[in-house]
Image (cartoon, rainbow, N blue to C red):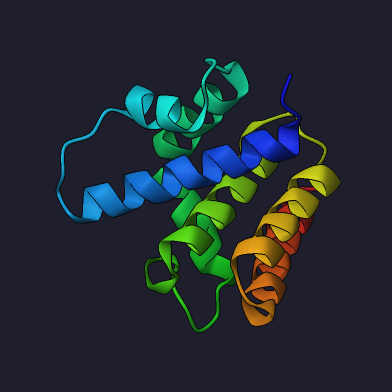
Length: 132
C-alpha cells in the first residue's frame, strides 16, 4: 500500500501532464496517464484527479483571489498542479486542512523554489482561513 504523500506526488505528476497535453492540444486518456505512474489502480488518485479537473475553474478563481501578482495561468504547470491539489483537498475533501497544506508544501519544496513554496503556503493558508 502506497502512502498518501507518495500518491499525492503521483496526482501532481498526472495533473502536470494533463495541463501540458491540454495546452498542446494533444489527445490523451486520463486512465492511461495514471497507469503510466501507478501500476495498480488507486481510488484516492483517480478521485482526486477527477475532482481537481471537475472543479478546476473554481479552484483557479479561488487561487487567483490570493495570488497577488501572478494569476494561476502564469505559474508553471507543476506549481499549478500543486496549488490545484491543495485547494481541492481544502475545499472538496475531508482531508484535515493542516495535512492538505503540509503535503502541498512538501511537494513544492521538492519541485519548486523557496519563493514559490512561500507563495503556495500563503495561498493555501488564506483559502483555509476563509473557509474556517
